[in-house]
Image (cartoon, rainbow, N blue to C red; front, side, top):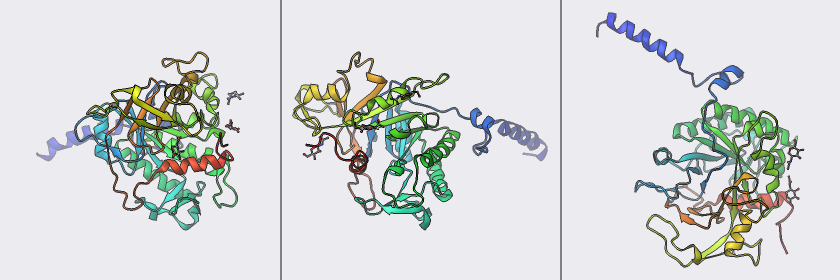
Length: 364
Ligand SMILES: *[C@@H]1O[C@H](CO)[C@@H](O)[C@H](O)[C@H]1NC(C)=O
Ligand SMILES: *[C@@H]1O[C@H](CO)[C@@H](O)[C@H](O)[C@H]1NC(C)=O
Ligand SMILES: *[C@@H]1O[C@H](CO)[C@@H](O)[C@H](O)[C@H]1NC(C)=O
């Protein structure tokens, strides 16, 4: 190509690219921030599948169940899986810890000594982070960049309720520190076109309403805390709209029926379920309880307080039961964790909430 023909082409390209929003707009500029704040958010009534042990195996070209939304470990789930899920019509919520440093994560070396607080009592190698420090925010922004590269539609920065734990920082981390931190994480993620979900953190739900796009509750039925979400799913203030809440309740089950090739439980009547916190409640009665189906006016179509409930086991593996009694097992693959095989996030989260609530509910 001669330079004379190349020049107009280059000018055209330049004009075209300058009309596109740049990825790195200054976040402090409110006009630009709103212009690019166009991202997917879960509809208020949605299903979700939540897998933190293993990663979905989509090698055979299908995913089951088609909940429409999958929450997965951001580091462990490869970009191909995220992209494959998207091709199968599923949105992805990418989970990472935003307030603890885990030695087995690739970017652990990016934390500085002053970022690190006490080690979590039951988790050697995992330490609280001082969420007020710039370096911590810097590491998290890089994680958000990875989420974007992998094709995540949304992030769930977990463990940000670090204020409720014995973390070793002085002066103490307050709920206001978490609110400020979430605001920055959220602004950054949204500027990259991803929505933001928050797990638990019920003490600050009202304050963070504008900074999050959905909430995840663990065991609000068992902790008698579902009503704290009523403001979240309905417009809390004039000019606002309610946002989706996903609720995960845990049970144990045995199943003597068969599974289909694609992991669908063929005979729901053959489930035997129980939950230590509801002794005596099994099967359908337990499911109705965990799904709030016995609350006045509640039904599968109009769930109590508009909360979307799924039932899982504490492993957070491929098993999921829905409020209508159907159940499925997403085919999963093991994760090469390098160390800590069989890592189970959940048991830690539960320990932590027990401590926060001052003991296990319904303890004899
Ligand atoms: C959650 O429920 C527990 C137990 O019923 C209660 O002590 C606590 O105050 C509730 N928390 C909130 C924020 O409502
Ligand atoms: C809902 O919001 C109203 C108004 O801010 C507040 O008075 C009320 O306590 C909130 N309800 C819950 C359950 O948090
Ligand atoms: C499931 O069973 C185990 C072993 O009995 C128990 O420790 C655990 O708390 C049970 N989980 C639930 C959610 O009931």
